[in-house]
Length: 441
Image 1 (cartoon, rainbow, N blue to C red):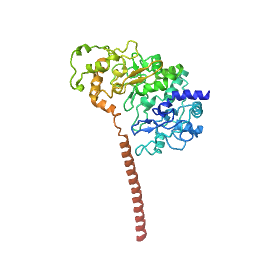
Image 2: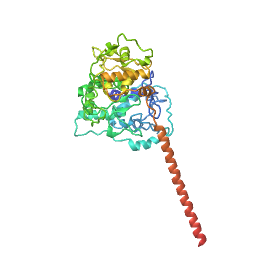
Image 3: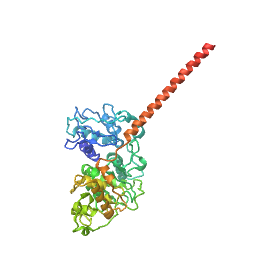
């Protein structure tokens, strides 16, 4: 029973998503997790005594999961969401330990080592980061709220670590509590606002719509999961009990609202069916494919599945492009990423497969197509630019965090050196005065 419970908790925590490399064995690590400071390779968390955590005691396991400290004393980077897992109860930690020690197949595979640039390669620096940003307190139920609300809060804040993606981060890469779940860029995909705001967030969604979305990756007439969220649905949320999903929905409906000033109405209410493909019939395509119009690109690459008026397939398997957060949000990164990477969602009892067009469409074509889709089916004020497409295709905007940190370290070292020099100079002057006073005496 303990191992079975631990298995469920590991699924809820989506541990397999980061600790399993493509084509690799479950939990054997080796997946490069992209971060602004470079790739961080996930560790082997199978019970292998050679390459995994097979020699970990319960206390060492707890320290790694909740405090970010490995058995050898070295610090983990918060790409491993121990800042959220710190909320876990002792009972859940015990069950997770039982599962990983006795319910997971040991794999003797050593993942690649993580090599980050200075000063981030000094893991001890994470001790200072934890002192500033890690809340060690486990979750405490709010007696003023219902058991269902408390269960949802425990899952969202802790085990399912929703804030890891959906909460913006400060310059030190720590989550901003004042903007909890208000939406954040993941470099390429954008984790949207899931606060209770009815315009920018999911305040206008029913609790059942939230449950359905988590279970299947779809909320008809509102959204479909893609990118990292599709992975979370496939690996984790679709396996959770209906009670736990309902608890998550109950809690999310109470998260303090945060609105994006650019959103003038609910992001899932933009657009309507639109048909103008007849206007391009019989017209020759331009010699340069980059000069194709939005209508021509839509006809060639989108209309087969999303239909001539953007209404989607008759059975609802392929969503309409209007009343869809991907086209209604002012931030169009997810629309561009869906075109470039496609949408791959298996969900519960159904599949959704949108092919990737990164190898077929140029940056200019993607920008033209994206602008056409938002203009006619979504938020007409939303913009898609060639520079944006180029940036997202390359993996996102380059981060200046490493340079800033290196400059900060140099400044600190210079200040320390000046302080030391000042102290030495003060000591030398004092001795000279003392010598002079003795001589004249």
